[in-house]
Length: 395
Length: 173
Image 1 (cartoon, chains in turn green, orange):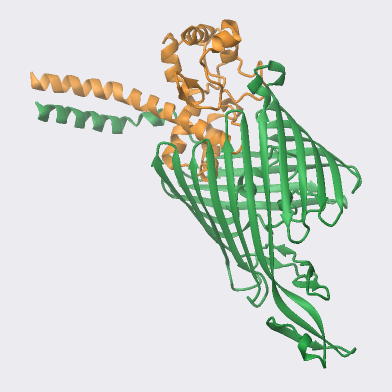
Image 2 (image 1 turned 90 degrees about the vertical axis):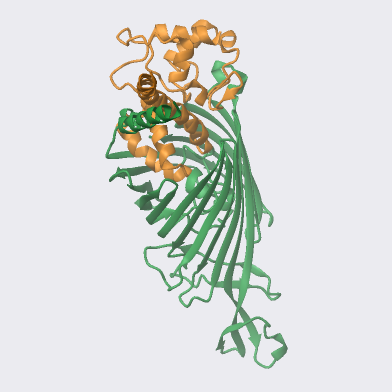
């Protein structure tokens, strides 16, 4: 009897496999143009009030079940009135196995969450980027911690299903890495007479070419209990000068906590950057020479030597953002309304804090009218207040 | 007798299992929809794109959300059952499923996004007491026209007739 049942089940299983019932639901497309954009108005005491806008199409191509190609272009108009175009990413995913994906090209670095996932304007609940992302959609007095959000290279993505809703995510990548901007002496920091660092003047950029043989490496390890929360730790390490002497490292911790009507996002980023500091040392006073590694000496006409020493800048910053959807009140009029508050803090170089309060009206799940008020107070006494009105849309 | 039994058993499993496997994939796809889309952004209702477009978008999101290939396919299956490109929700032309409310909830995997009898997703509100909150007509209208009381609702516009919607409302009472 058992033998017959076994035979029956085996034949049924074979029938099921050949039936492939899931395929009845599936169709195969070739390409899609999606993306996002925004138009906004900014009122500030610090800068002239301006309208601005962006159009960011994303081109998706499915070559077959294993190969997926994607590219994102950003079109905007700069302060000089010229149209600016930027290739945010252009890469190819190869789905090597069920839970292994390889990526090649220019891709968004899986460093924390804002850069790879939250930065599109219809995904970002506020019209501005957090203060520690000053250079990437940020504004005002705060400068960004992480120099690049995307770069050229190779990446591998792995995930593990622990069962239930628990997942482990691992991303590893090797990319060209950052380089100091070439049009100034940007790797030279400035120090006062007490060797206190005034400003690093480190400006980084990524390009399709690398300025040294060293490649940057990075990755992110995250644990998620879907869909409620996800916590991740990221690292990034790159040499940025022509001679592979100067190092930039970044580490981050991120958390994303989702409720039915609310969400909390937060990131902490710490960076360390080597920089050459120029000190002036009198010729006949050996005791004033710096103890740090001397990098270069140039005799000067006024009896002083210009001595460059290698120092390390340690910066850090964080943000926490909370959003609440008023549909929890079960009042039809308030269903599309959302309230957001964000606090950002940067330490060491451009120290300051920023509060941002916003209210969104969602016209569709991917189109929102946002109104936000942002107040920045720097530790050196400068402050800045701005009001933003933005219409953002994903398509 | 044994041979007859095994043949009947094989036929039973062969005929019914593909349906259950597909339905299970849809239900699993709804759960994956609930688990992943809202992690970063508002979930977008299926009718925003055609099914062929979703087949290209889902692999894009697979990488971003760290989904497996199997999960991506199940997500596509769930999206597919909510789409009927040539039919309009509530249309008189739409054939009534006549499955009954409970079976319809299973077919369209309502529990993927809504908590029902203590289990289910959290993208949408819990359905306990929903008829008392919205009224029977309100529930029917919500099923047929999900954005009527919230333009940002991510609830898909299911291919259901008014009769089906009424059956669902009855089952939720």
